[in-house]
Length: 140
Image (cartoon, rainbow, N blue to C red):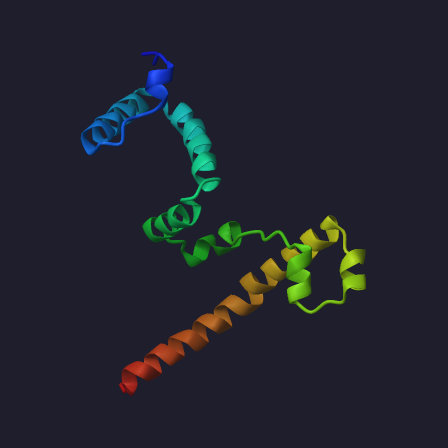
């Protein structure tokens, strides 16, 4: 069922009844789409939300709703884009920072990511669990 677009439908009044009815209409249309179209539209909506003011809130909702498992660590641990500011925060001299291209920074980030996944995560887990167990054995 095609949705007609006009200037009036572009702006939805801010009263709760109208908003609720609009959300219900969107969900009804959403469920009428084939799954592959829901996936591509979902990616478009996600892109829109992640470039808006609710980005951080949405990230927290996703992380709380679908927490990662350790089995997913290698495939889901984020790739971090290192900026010149990041390198300055790491106390690298400006002349060294200037020598590092974006490709070099991606290589550094990937090496750090793999190091964390394979060498740091498990010892950190053990240490943090031991601290928790100690606090359970010795409540303040």
